[in-house]
Structures are given as C-alpha cells and as structure tokens.
Amino acid sequence: MNRLYHVALSPFCRKVRLTLAEKKIEVELVEEKYWDPSPDFLRRNPAGKVPILRTENLTLPESQAICEYIEETHPNPPLMPRGAEARYEVRRICGWFDDKFNAEVTRKIMNERVWKRVMKKGHPDSRTVKEGLAAIKFHLDYMGWLLDQRRWLAGDVMTLADFTGAAHLSCLDYISDVDWDRQASVKDWYAKIKSRPAFRSLLADQLPGMPPAPQYAELDF
Image (tube, rainbow, N blue to C red):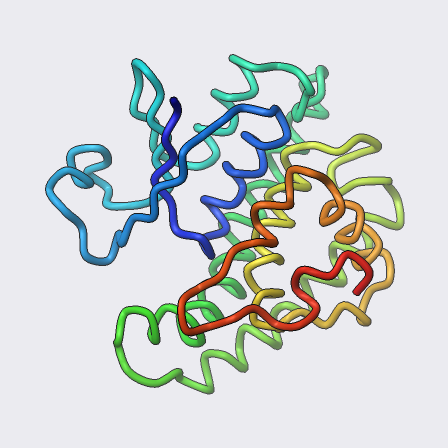
C-alpha cells in the first residue's frame, strides 16, 4: 500500500492527492504534524516538509517531483501534454501557484487564519491577511485572462496545472476567502474541477475545531 504523509489543508499535499485520485492509485493518508517533527519524519525528509509519498521501494518528497514521478510511472489518464512547449507551460503554471501565489496569497492567509490557531502561535495578524486578500484579486484576474484564451489553465486539456491551482484555491475556499464572483470564468473552471471524482476526498476534509465554510463542499456554489 502506498502511504502519503500529508496535512489536509496543505495545497502541496492536495496537489498530490488529486493526482493520485485522478489516476485511481490507492493510498493511505497519514496526517503529519510537520511543525512538531518526529525523528522518523525527518529521516523520511530532512527538509521537514510534507507531502512525502512512500511506495514499496521509495520515499519521495517534494510535491512537483512526486506528481511528475506519478505521471511517468502511471501515464494514464495523462496530466502532462506530449509536446515540449505544452509541458513547459504546465510547469510554468504549476510554478506560478506553488511559488508566487503561495508566497503572496496562500501562505499569508492560511498561516494567519488557520495554522497559527492549529499550532497555538497566537492571534492572526490582520495586516498580513489583508495583504493576501488584496493580492488574490490580481491572481484571479490573471487566471481569468488565461481562461479567456483557453479551456483550461495551461491549454485546451486538463493538466497538472489545473490541479495545482485548484489545490491552492480549495484551501482558501475552506475558510471562504475566495471571491468567486470576481471572475466568472474562474468560478466555472473551479466548478468543473470540483465536480471530478478525484476531488471528493478533499471536499470531505474536516479540520478539528474549524469546520469548512458552507459552500465548500457544494458543487453548485
């Protein structure tokens, strides 16, 4: 049995979960408190980060590397296009979310509104939250611009880029911090992703003491 060490509201873990589910690869989910690491956890990944995918023979950290490993070992259904330029665009969009979007939006909002509470590190910094909420407007507009030209974020077929973007937005949607009325095309795109069977386990996530927003699990939101 494959085992994924993860945190439910981590976008990086969610990206891997979506990839595994889309390819119908069974996995045991193990919650890992990476902020209070055990020696075993640090042996699995000295970087002290989740996700970590444990297979029969390998221990694999780093979400993008894990997803591309899964893609290469389980190519159907494909989440990466064939051509070099198209594959570049998928990786570019993945990098956009995992680097820029995460730094400007996800980390600022989730750290303050969720992880400080979970880790018992004090009260949210409202200024940092406001910075994240201001920044997400630019990112939603950029996504809208992409989707005005394409059916999906990186082209005309669904790819790992879409799962990466949806992983980040789903964490924020859990605490109702996405203005879905800002860009109709982004809302329609997310509704398509959200309706996929691969998304079901994410919609069932429940953080103890912090229930999801009412619209979080609704397919018609």
